[in-house]
Length: 176
Figure (cartoon, helix red, strand yellow):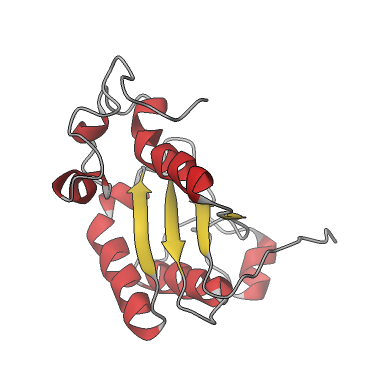
């Protein structure tokens, strides 16, 4: 059994990548964006966290979130988000014998990628990565054109200019 190392830092800011189990051609996250949004809000009410940046793509999502002072429990937040989102869906997905035996749904990959943000430069790189991802995956030519992102709120707040991450990649700090 692999020994996964997780970094727990109370009150820390983290970057996450969370994937659907079946990624190829799957558009579940944007098809059910309202369910995902309401699920995240319900979890935030019970287990608060601050969303700095978030993007939802058809088959995965990226985010930068900050936990409350003294709190390092992101694992239960993700468990609740995945579980509650899955409960809101009809049971139509294919499940392996192992998942059936464990009573698990076949919606999400069990694991996720997490990274503790180290400093302001690391924060900026990951925020740019989050928001540029729809362009990187060829879903849109300009970041502003992707509707499932905190980019729009950050433009309103003056954090990003509206033309950041356009087709010419002008103004990007992200380097693939």
